[in-house]
Amino acid sequence: MTYLITGGAGFIGSNFVKHMLSAYPNSSLVVFDALTYAGNLGTLQNELKEEQVTFVKGDICSKKDTEQVFKDHKIDFVVNFAAESHVDRSIENPQLLDILK
Ligand SMILES: NC(=O)c1ccc[n+]([C@@H]2O[C@H](COP(=O)([O-])OP(=O)(O)OC[C@H]3O[C@@H](n4cnc5c(N)ncnc54)[C@H](O)[C@@H]3O)[C@@H](O)[C@H]2O)c1
Image (tube, rainbow, N blue to C red; front, top):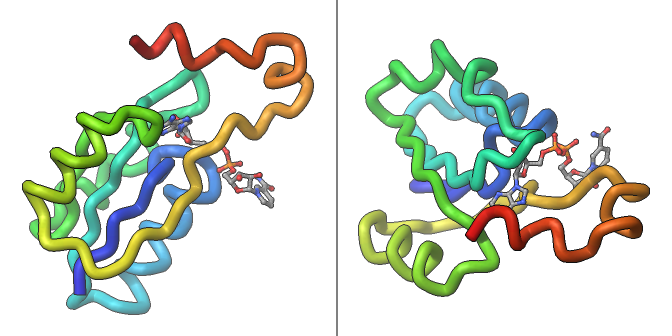
């Protein structure tokens, strides 16, 4: 089974990737993340060396990015952790995602 893990470079997402690799070593994982200020690929340094783990830089708000990842990979499940989790920041600046474009 192939899992698309959106926000997989964040705190919860990267721990989920580690859990999946240890609990379901035969699964394939596509880590999809926009790498905002909160994303850190360093936390997945070892996991990204595994054959069944792929990283894709993309924005879940972008139709183009999301359509492309579904074209390139046969996804069975989507697990979403992509979020603006700093609530104060999201209230102060709801347009923050503009910086991703
Ligand atoms: N951290 C906690 O203790 C906790 C507890 C309960 C629930 N949650 C929930 O889990 C989710 C993830 O939380 P977290 O602490 O891992 O957050 P985080 O900020 O560490 O990670 C979010 C990840 O999403 C990515 N991202 C943001 N916007 C994106 C976009 N448009 N497209 C693609 N990627 C994008 C960021 O680059 C980052 O890697 C949130 O919904 C949060 O509310 C977190």
